[in-house]
Length: 121
Image (tube, rainbow, N blue to C red; front, side, top):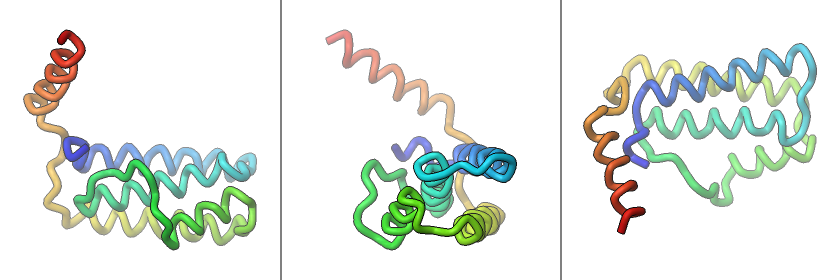
């Protein structure tokens, strides 16, 4: 998972979220469809801070907030405020981040090669 800790990955997560928020503003997405946007932004913030992506979110304020969005207990305005705040925070983190710009292609190729070799054995 550490291979994916780079600025390009973070930007792709943020771009996905910005696009989803634009669709949400045209036609309100509810529940799971909009909670996913905030979840991706939390993940982008973790990666921007140099932390590997999480497979399972442990009990935390993030998890509670996501559950509340999914169960439609959070107002649209509150969800948008949190999402926009996360986008701004991520932009600030990236502006001074020492993360690599992208995945090192030779390292990624080795990763893929190892996966293929494991399946051949």
